Length: 241
Ligand code: IPE
Ligand code: IPE
Ligand code: MG
Image (cartoon, rainbow, N blue to C red):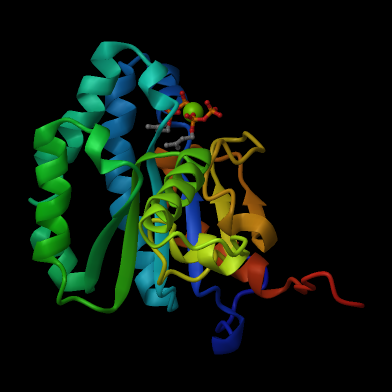
């Protein structure tokens, strides 16, 4: 790999978001059902969580199911939900070995009860692990999250009849994971160059990394290459260069 060598500790991203795309195309190219692509995608997710933990990424957000993914066929949605209930808690030895604490963002209320319980269960099971915090964005949409945040504030305000204007900090603190820093780096695999409603408030200044390789093909070195690319960038936040 070009530019090998140790990464400077100060240059690694604290929070990385990943839009794990390309499962369906991976399967179709092999004349397999789309579900095989999702199954393989799960393996890729485990490889990348390990890579992220080893690289010193403290927070990792994985986009697993968007608020728009309900538009897929009932069979595909059912398969994806089944992956969650079938594997999320079962991977406890993996979380323990790598030191993964799992948290969730998105609208839990609108997920099937079994999925909801599985998510709540894994959050409780992994509360004590602290090498990396993995945010599973499931039934997540950036616009939906902002709306839910505004509505939470609105509800609170109805009670204490507060009349001061809402500021950005208040809105930020009412998002799903108020303690998560904004992503430094967002990776999208699978060749598309868009955010598809992922962390749209938090990504205001994220560095973007697009890669054609399909998600099930992603491995440890691909993550390292993305982090290395990030480490060479100069962030500016609107200042003079
Ligand atoms: C990403 O892969 C996984 C989910 C959105 C759940 P896709 O299923 O979108 O794969 P492509 O884009 O059809 O190849
Ligand atoms: C984004 O991928 C959502 C997830 C990876 C969960 P999609 O495949 O759903 O996005 P679009 O439809 O190509 O924008
Ligand atoms: Mg896709």
